[in-house]
Length: 571
Image (cartoon, rainbow, N blue to C red; front, side, top):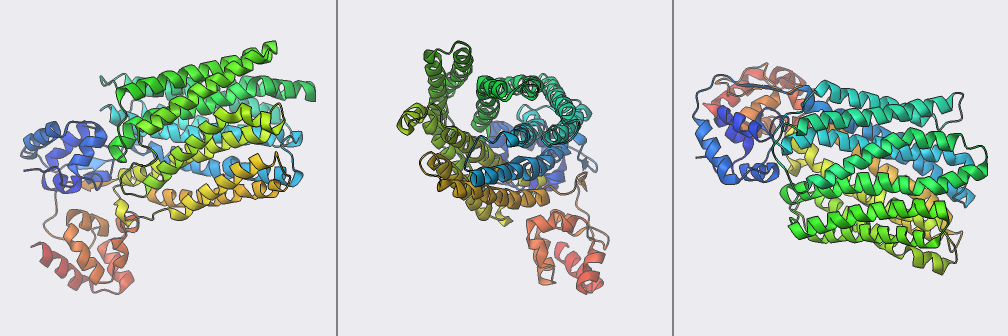
């Protein structure tokens, strides 16, 4: 009888026909031939299938006659790696690294209004929104949403096309921030390509989700978030032209003041915020051990978030058009509504104290803590500007944005991917790094940035501290990025495996395959000098490329004696 505590690889090895049941509920593309190192109960919870139903279907399928079953990853199963890898490249170049460089110059100049850096700042912002956050959202959506809804990704080649178009658009848009001939044309074409990539992404995702009959309460968060993504992408080339063709510095400043605040809120609060808060309700309780929010909290928070965003953006545009302060107050009222909704949902998720014991918990808790910091700063911003004696504080407003983008959005990307990617690759989380150093560096850098930037309103001595804070964040992201890159394996890696165990271990079999078939043989590998195979990461990378013959040659181990020991154990 198949029990709820059995690991998926053990169930599938013993009963290959059960693979079809697991695939029915979204296993395909997760964990290779035998699935990830998780229990049947965990699989049922994460994939949203009632445990009793799953166990009954597995029991019915386990004795079904089947021949040799093979498994091969398809394009739709590996696409997320391409999106994630390029997102890492972007954040470590035009994203966080460029931002840290500009911040350092601000620190040296002791000002936030250096117009000669305006092009670089816009290129940095574009890379962060469409390259860092956008590519991660697109990759996760193509990988996760079909599995949440029990369907297969439709038109994977077009999904890959969206990736290629977005990557091309990002390269051109970043190039436009440099003082080079033809920069305007590069930026315009880059913005158009980014918009086209988002349109294609949404078309493929829409065609995929249309195949499913499953509707969830968190869907509305995602749909509004994706709508904000589409609207912001369509506006990107328009705003780029408006800002790039300003006839004077005065007009440029006025256009920035008129449009950039609601535009950034559309991108950050609308797209990134609503997507994360929506998906959090699906994955944090199921996969990360946080509390499931009640229906009232989910519905009420959604109302506050969406209404708040509309009032915020609309109030600001009317204020800039009329100059009447009451509309600025209305815009702030919208921000308060949004912040209240976000905090309500965070409390409903028990996001500050909950979570299961694994390396992602501290990242997710910290992300929601920074969300709370950003929300509280949004609420008190008018009181702060009054106390500081200024009409608008670039320092305080920028600190809010940083607390939200790096503190909440980026740490959520780190926290979720640090658990999801190992599961997708079939790697046991217990053998992986705790990611404490990246966690400390990013949070230290974020705290220095937010605190010191606000302090610049009161003393110029805070500028140097603010200026170097970005270096901590970049180093932390680099360490995490290198780790995730290794976990994902090769760019085009295909996983092909037989579902039936061989009766005899032969010299040209891969080391990792042998351990997949017979986990009890791991100790023999270790005692014969192959200690590296204890590490799940090395076992799932190097171990899948090295045959027993090659391994014995590298370690000067007698091949015949080693094979005899292995085969003697399984007889």
